[in-house]
Image (cartoon, rainbow, N blue to C red; front, side, top):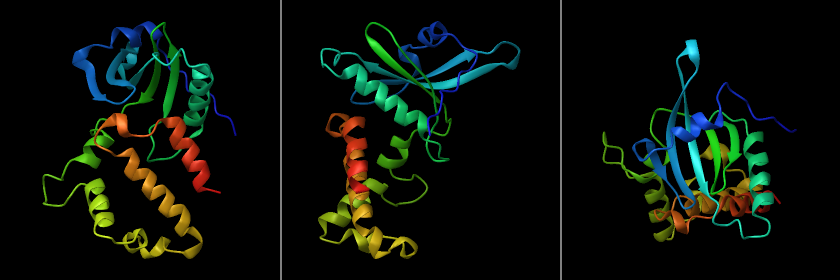
Length: 187
């Protein structure tokens, strides 16, 4: 099933003018993420999370094709735990992904920082320790999903999740690699 991007009432120039250092809410291996407010006339402001991706891979032969393929995958995802891709566009030096904005902090905060209200460990740290202690991934699974027919896929996704939550963004796999590994997990 192919989904069209949701087109809201804004111009690319409105998004571009909101990309200032004071609006940066995150950084990753490929660029920055901004919180951008766009005036929607009588309805007030719409707020978006805008990922700015450097075009320094443009010398790569298939960069444009790969970017468009990733956008196609991202716009087809409809899940309550995944932010929706609203739009995408390009400039000479950057590509932009416009996502719905979720005001309750970033996933990075939930993955990499301990819960201040308790002494519990961040999920990715717990998972790394679990493996370093020689414990099997299946020992960490909820009994409701611990069915033998899914163990290989769960192990694959668990390992991918660990790679995607590495502290250093440059050590994390690219979206292309993530998609490739997810497809491989399902085989």
